[in-house]
Length: 413
Image 1 (cartoon, rainbow, N blue to C red):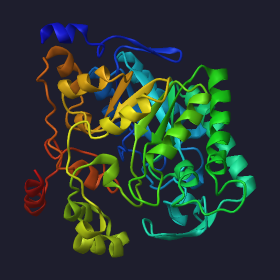
Image 2: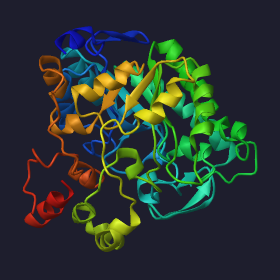
Image 3: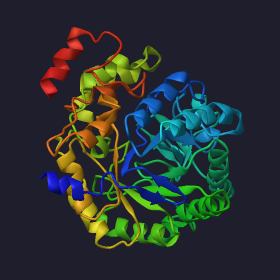
């Protein structure tokens, strides 16, 4: 087995666009909930520096909105010139630890409120979003053009802030995904109906991103849904066609994911979400949702049992159809699991929960053997609290966790 590890490509350098990663690991763009007033904080810096120090090849700051209307929460980043100095402070510190720095860019579409977005929420189509909950206005054609340009502008801003890579969020039911999915796209113009029409907005965004990336030397990854996770959403055959279209843009990699935050959130992350814990951390200003989640959360949110490498079998179907580099994400908690993925032909791997549990996990993988495993046991406390307070693991949380929450968490284990 020692011979197998020596032959592994996990700790070999990888050329991602114009930057060379020291190994094949990436901290995925899971929401940290560590920003403030749409900007970075010392806490956000400290976390990503700890991950960089822990040996990861690249760490990715989560979800930076390309414009004000794309924000869901106050703790998210709004990628604009005013926050460049704060972000540059973070990227400089990441680079000093030997890691590359990435940032995810996107737009939440219908998953917001007027108080956060600064305007009436917009999406692919007019309707009502139960996730927020809020009424939503379908985007005008002129807005489609302008928002696509905002994605390009975000690349220039990211480059100015010192980022080596951007990850375009085209999955999970956010704006680009809302145009792609027949579940949320009910338009009757050139942006709706056929798959070619539903890909039009994505194409416009990627055109702007790739033009900006070429001028700045920024690497580009695209997060893409293999499936939405329910019958009326995108299924694998159609998703493969979308992935082939993304590939044509010459992106540096596609991150393969699944799930729809507003419809099938646990299809994204897998595991059994502790809903009473989630309700506990929700603010009383959202008291109707807080009460509903506490009483009916387990019935509202479809639960999935966790298994390691839970997306791998579906991801292999994309590997067989695509030539571009692919990044695997989904349930990586051990050296053995990572080796399975790399042996299946994937160029890089992303992890989040294992690095929330232990930012130094990658160094432990390097120094350990095939049996090296994360201490994360997927009680998903980190996810239950991440949209209300900061993302922390129950095993190293810096604040007291009430006994009644431990009771729920212990049942999930």
